[in-house]
Image (cartoon, rainbow, N blue to C red):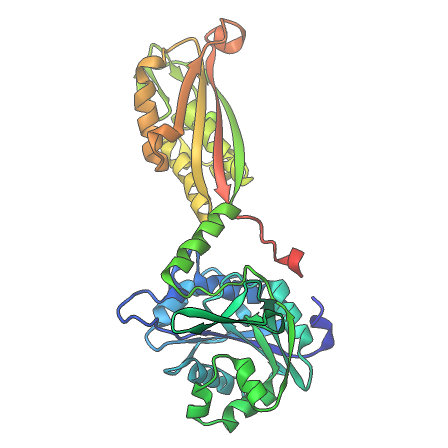
Length: 404
Ligand code: MG
């Protein structure tokens, strides 16, 4: 990160005080869920991943503290996150409140970002910061690709030359003292005429450099934007397939538990827990898709607390790990390998039980069985084996570094 070595102190101000235009529409868009995070949490996370930024302050609306705390939960590097500042009735008033909160620490550079732009990358933040000089601000912008027309009473009038125009994004970076002075030199009415900080800086005579923006760095403004952003996250999800295998030997008993279903049998299965070989293979398949070890790692057999345990506990834990990783389990498939007992009569009950445990539709749960034509340990009736695969959609690994 190129800005780290130059010794400047860079603070970020993330503006998230808007209440939306339509009253009563809750939650405000910056607190809406976007995958495992919120729109705001995702934006703040990008700044936390940019090492050049030494402090981050979010400007929020009064009354949004609880939503803010929830949105910040679990962010890494949160020690650089300063307490939130309560904003004002307009974006300009909110930025001014944020700038004033930075006066005591007086950073060299301030980066101002819309809390409703969740797809900002650490790379873009670094490029903007690096382009800020002692006398000039910097903003990211994209060339306009559509042909532009001036409107005349609902009709298209002349074409506007788009080559001299750009669409402007955030974060926008400025020498802190100069931007604060620009804000303070303008009265509330003059401030209200501007729609971004670069306008205010330029209005006060500060030069503003333009760096290349990123097409993905959209602002969530209209309701459809949020749906599009969510769809993009799903498209970015990567399928991970995990494989599980398990064997349990027959022993004394009067029944076996397979895929969560109790089946009367003239023998039992030996094992530390309920010896549900099907759920064990399946649980390992899910851990495998997450690359998070196996059942023995999460539930050590040396721990007496798992003696006779219902293997649903293991499976449920694996499913919870998928959710914690921001993923989604989409499909599982289990093969039970044995001569006896007959699986066919219990197949539908197993499918229903596994589907219920995993919160999947039965159509996404494959359960089947095979013999080994009397070959091998299963064929000799010494035990039961099970194989399973699980498909998990996980968020794409953070690609920020590749932009930087
Ligand atoms: Mg086992």
